[in-house]
Length: 377
Image 1 (cartoon, helix red, strand yellow):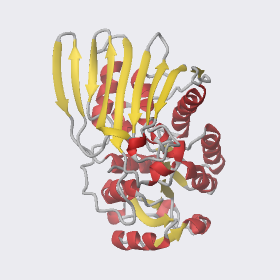
Image 2 (cartoon, helix red, strand yellow):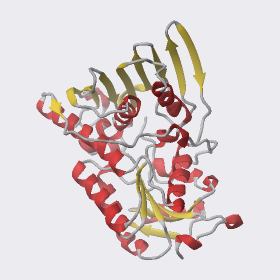
Image 3 (cartoon, helix red, strand yellow):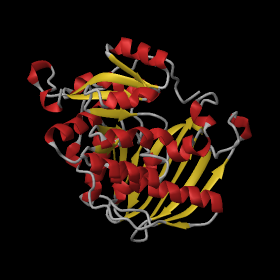
Image 4 (cartoon, helix red, strand yellow):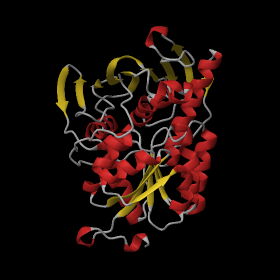
């Protein structure tokens, strides 16, 4: 059945998805919200654990179940139009490239991959297969984030000067993220959030990783083969600076501040999806606070992506958007390895977030994951 004839209730077209990778984010955050998008439906699940896949499919009422080894058969089955890809970071290209070459659209969790080379292969595959690739930056559709962007573009903060952010979670020593070294640590798992925020708030690309300093805490219970806490300073255009710290060994915190010559916006929470995001604004001497409506970030971004597929539009946070963040991450890794500043290769990103692309689906209840655990202790 082609997408042109994939109709749901009431005759409305729906994009048929397979969820590839059944970790906590896929099960608790994405899968519960698919039904209320109105334009998407879950028809298949894919996992390296066949028993888990069967159990998740049974609970979700999904007919088609595949293992990773059977992924090629899924692509040729005619059962799906798109995949939501939530495997570990370093396995994104492994599944995205063949899917995209086969003309299957891909909504890929961030980071796009762990190297720009792998990310570029994904972008090339999308072009070769005529399929759409979207990096799953859910905050590109979140009301508080888009409001901050609109205020900055309207000049409320004046000339932007500096950004700072702290994003931390107390990771569980038993979770797989702390047993796969740098590629699953906070630089790849958490840093994409402040890096992407820096880029969408400033509306420009970082020029240099001025410094990146990492620390390891033996008392954390983590293997001592990766930095559990990393602090980064980036140089931006027009004499602006951006700094952030990410950590697997600090109590939960989730905040950012963007400051200019006329005012500042402090957001806390700034990145999470479990509660409404909030702003504290200071414009001149006037201080205001606003708690925004909580939304279903995951269902919202899928609804947007499905609309892009159905209407043949290019998604805004595309593969190149993911590549821009990978470029910065690679610079951070080099700075950690060498202890030296790292000039970043120049890039031109002409497409930015449209504040009108806000999604306001109501939040949904998260089920207990099957065969997966929360990353936090």
